View 1 (cartoon, rainbow, N blue to C red):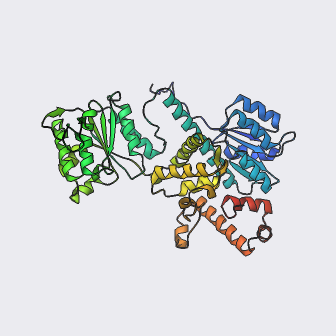
View 2: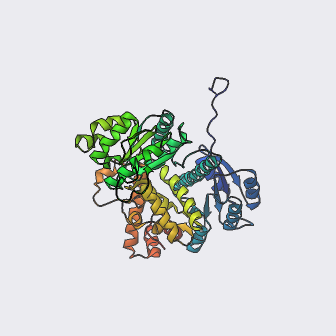
View 3: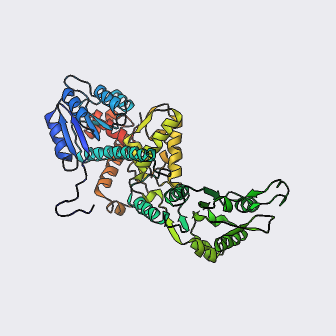
Length: 474
């Protein structure tokens, strides 16, 4: 339905945030801070909070630890019993390390101390918590659609790069034309190929896939073309190949750049004649399949290097879809993390999570050269090795947790001063805070109390800041 002057498009629904605090100033401060970007509800005590929580589905709850007649952690536990994926932030004016640990074990996303000296950090913490809630809801929505009969595997991602790619896939899926998928290793080319099959008119017919780089030439040839009885030693019975078996459906050739020159020539003839001949036979057989190819290298570059037939390249490069690497998919890491965390918790019978803000920041800052596959293995390892509860930086894979360019807002000695001036204000400020905390702790010989005295920041507040930026880990 097209919007008209009488039917304007509805504005996107704002996230719903519940703020529970008996301090009027704190409630007013948070309300004014986020009222333009969130639908805020305020409660001064546990009774009000319970009533509001029962009436609405909140995306985030900011809870004071000490309420007139309730304990904030216990109240959040009560809320989480009704909404297991509830994202929450605990606030306190009486910071204590044991309380922080208890809050994290209860599944609280973040633990903030009052008074809030840095409103930008408070706003950023709220924004990150809402981002996690969006990820949970998107994953739940996707699973609901799959459960309702939507075909194909889950392809997670709402970034602009993924939306563009999925739009191309939807367009080409029903056109019954050859598709070439280009993307780095680990970007999910096999999942996209299965999506094309699921959305195509051939979805009721077979979908067969072969990794051309994982098989010797002779084995790949017999797998694709099949063979007659007696064609070679051990061929005790005739066997149809994938070209025949895929009749009416889709055939996916992964890593086609690794196919030998001989098989490239054979594949070209099959595509031209729509016929294939089994090994040891002279009888051609008609076949009708849609070909989907994938490569992690540029086929145009392979053609120039003389490693791939130019005529075959033009035959399979009818529609080319590029899969974006994870580093180009802004905002998708947290969505993928939420998906993998839930998946592996269910697989291993665990209850790991949520991730701490520092862990989320680390995961989002990593370059992920192995793309989605590498991120998946990182979360699988973390869930497999962690007994239960919150996941912090130390629980992530060593290749991620130990990288200096993956730590929250960490600078390196090679960065020139003039480069700092070119980065965003918020990033520069965060970098300064981390470096300052490191230097003040070093000046105090690792003593947090002495660092608090030197800095003039209350010890509780200083400790929480150091914990957030990974300056201290215990």
